Image 1 (cartoon, one colour):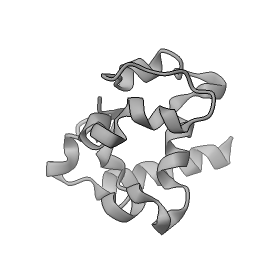
Image 2 (tube, helix red, strand yellow; image 1 turned 135 degrees about the horizontal axis):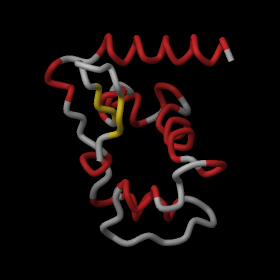
Image 3 (tube, helix red, strand yellow; image 1 turned 180 degrees about the vertical axis):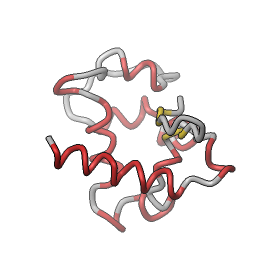
Image 4 (tube, helix red, strand yellow; image 1 turned 180 degrees about the horizontal axis):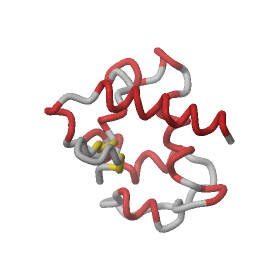
Length: 114
């Protein structure tokens, strides 16, 4: 339990430490996942995933991916960081947390941009 708490604090420090005032408003999924890379097109690459509407967004995904084995957080972090520099999110977007996350500087709370 202590290791998890330390890990969380380290990640939080990195996120808060790298957030600029301009980056406080994260872009959200739809800013990158459009056209060929829309969420609807991306799930076509996942074996066994049911089709989603063309206008699928974060809330659409959360209907099935709220918690448990299919929890969205672990799934998204894995695919957005797997492969290091070979990964498009890392190589083109510098793997910055604030592309997806919003940090409230007053409270330090972190949420997901929709």
